[in-house]
Image 1 (cartoon, rainbow, N blue to C red):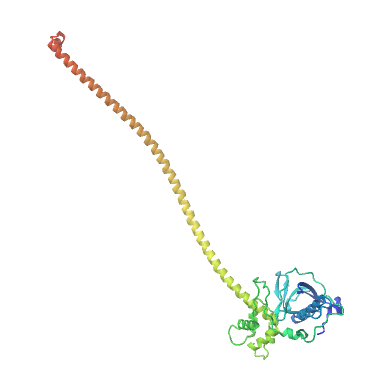
Image 2 (tube, rainbow, N blue to C red):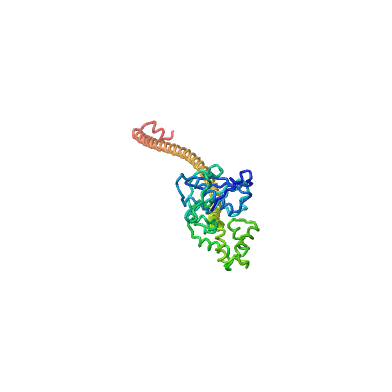
Length: 371
């Protein structure tokens, strides 16, 4: 295959549209500006990327290194940077290439296996490097001598990091991807995908193709024009659009995981709402309990004050009662003493009277005689 580069043949002034493409070469990232006469199609862009980065890889190899099959760059999938959402998205339609100098990242494969990219900052874009005498062509016996074979080959099972989940994509056989997407796009299991099911299938995974693009894709798949795509036709279609199949498959898997997460989130949010309602009820009950406690504390303080007042009055009364009893006892004691004195006096008086009578005391006699 003789590689040609319009950028260097026609000159930069003739370029009307530039696509910046970054890829990993020889353990480092290379960001090149690829010229086109207008917005390229997916196949044109992929072909230009493969040709340019293959030549770039050989130009960067040390002199005398010889031919190395690893220098052949085979694009397995592409992503384009969306300036509106500020994130990378799978490049599956030429409609996404709608801005001059848009940034694309190309993932490559080697011997049917994905190549892990180095973790480096994306460099500033530059023009491709030309080696002396131009890029050398690969030997005719290599697979790269037939670009059509590269484009029609089944896409590899990617082992790259998926930006939606942050996990590594699993190595899924291509046959499983073809069958899975066919089943997803044909939920009625009628044996063929209709035009409506194809458009709905793309929308279900977040790919909003224009109606004319859906018509084009369906026409490409429906080779016998019976208005439905059989599984055999679908297999051929997947070979023509391997990147689209890859994107739809993993978006479908991501959507299923996202739906599961959303279901779990809804359950948790429902439980949170229930707990918040219960918490509000408990707070109201707690406020009622606290109000009742405050009322009981107030009553307790009142009764304690009444008890203290009662105790003071009781102590005062008991002191007065004790004083009264002591006075009563002293008075009774005095009465008893007076009674004893009166009794002694009466005895003495009686004794006196008897003695006076016996001695014929005139005073006593006078008293006795009633004088």
